[in-house]
Each structure stands twice: as C-alpha cells, then as structure tokens.
Length: 387
Image 1 (cartoon, helix red, strand yellow):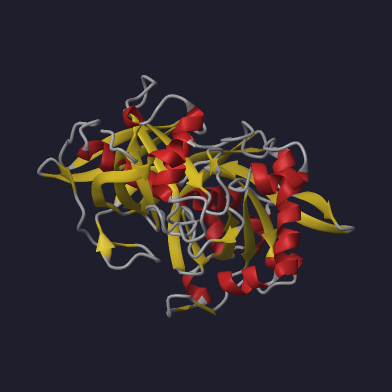
Image 2 (cartoon, rainbow, N blue to C red):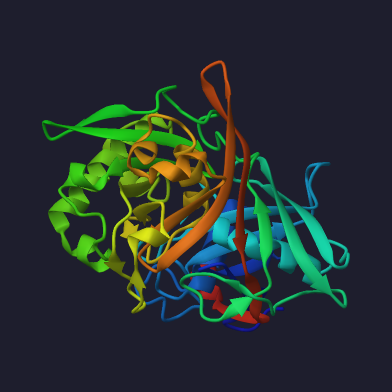
C-alpha cells in the first residue's frame, strides 16, 4: 500500500526471553539490501538514541530485528536472519546470532503458518542464516497455537510462561569455523603495554572471556557502574578489538567499534559471590556456579544473552579456560551450569566429550519463554526511504 508521503509494512513485535524484537516477513521487504536497510532503520526510528520516530525501544535489548522466511535448506523449517539495529548510527549488524530473539522464532513461525502446529509439542528447525547453522526449538502448542502460560521463570522477565527448549549443540564455530579459534583454551592479548589473559571461544556467538581481577574489578558491578567508568570501557573495547581480528571479523582492532560492534561479545568472569541485582533482589554465591557481566553493541547487558549463555557453557566444559578456572569446582562435573548475571541467574545444560585432547560439545540446551505482543502495520516516511 502506498500513501502520498508514507509507505506501510506489516510487522509483529515479539518478546523472546529477555529481549524484544520486530519481526518482518522476508516477502514484505525488497531484495535490494540498501533499500531494505533503509526501510528497517525507518521502522525502528534509527538513528536516534530515543528512536522516538519508530518502534525501537532505545535499548540494545529492544532494538532487534528478525527477518523470517520459508526455508532455503532441506533440513530446516524456516529461515531466520537476525539484525542488531543501532540507534546511534544508520547501521544494522548482521554478523551474529541472538538467542533470546531465536526463542520467539518458533512461536512466530507456527502462528503465521510457516510451520504446522503439532500438539503438545512442535519441533521447529530454524536456519540461522547469519551463521548458516540449524537451531532446534521445541515449542509447546495447544489448540493449534503456541502456548503462552506456564511455570517457566526467567530472571529479567516478569511473571512466568510456557517453556521453550532450544538446542544449540550444533551452533559452534559460528564465525571462525571451530570452537577455539587459536586451538588454545587461553591466550594473551597486549593493550597499551599491558598483558591480558583471555579465552576466545566461538559457540552461539564468538566471545572474549576475561577474569574480573584482570580489569581491576570485583565482578559484581552493575552495568551502569561499568559503563560510567570510561577508562575501563576504553580498555574493554581495545581488548575486544584485538580479539575481533583473531576471530576474523575485522582486519584492524580499531575497526571493531564501527564494523563489528555486535561481535565478539565480551564477558567479565568471576567466582560465585553475593551481589545485589538491579531488579532489587539479592543473589547469594550459593545460588550460582559462576558470575558474569557481559558487553555487546558497546553497552553492558542488563541480564545475559542466550548466545552468551551458550558460549559461557561451552567455555565451562573446556579445561583451562578462564571460565573453567573461576567456576565452582563441583559444577565441573555437573550437566547444569548456573550463571549469575545483573538481573539474577539462569541455567544452561551442557555436556562435552574429549576427542584426542580437543573438546567437542555434545549438548547445549537453554530454556526460554516468548510471546506475541503486537502485530499490525508500521507507517514509514517515503522521503526517508527514497532520500
């Protein structure tokens, strides 16, 4: 439909886990990538830190895009392209995956008829086009619709919901083709004349893991406290930039800030300890196996991303990594890893085997909830798209 000064595009707002995204059918977008991105930016109201003229929520957890289409692979039921939409620059980062938004792909695909509903549980094989891999979701269904109500609790999300199981066991080597890009559990990176010990792991998304003490931190700081420390944030970005080169995302460390702000994620790891969550609750060290604070899109995450969870679990199963060294000793022999984050804690089930001294992930499962919030038509200015 075309109006004098505005165009329209159908879209749906879905919450997946602790994130919220705008879902658009691939058939409703132009093939031309430049025009497509102009439309998407206009839908979100970017670039603008408030995204006041669009549907974006002016937060890295709500400025997320999911493009959904029919499968282009025989082993998939649906194609899903993720985009992290910047609200500071006219830029959409398609270089990574988003686990929380992935949780909403299955319910969305069932709702719009791309996948046939099978009660009581529908299996949806999701083709992550960003990394060319398959994620499997188990979605509870009732009366032909994805269930919403249930008893699954997620830290950072009010109330409870129907549990969606996500199997990430096949999502390793998303960027560099292997779990450990350097084949080592730990590496040394040099920044401003100082040596930093890190673990570089690629599962779900590529991550840089570093001990909190290496950055002069306790590890329980709030996202706001970390972001307000400008010198610390600069150091983090310099380390992340060097890791981005190793992962093959950029050629020069300084390019990471503009060309690859989404990946790699950056996780600050510490041993179990007490801390006060930003939502007002208290976290006791007895309740978690490891504590983490994670950065992506140059901002601190208020909870914990699912792809970050997947990668943290993978790192926890590789002897000698930063995560392995600081995690609770008893958790090294358990299937469930409990990660403490600023909003509480979350569980991930992960097992691995040793094949000739090389760790191979056998299973990585996380549990999320999701629901549709709104569907309708977004009006966007023709002049913004054509200008």
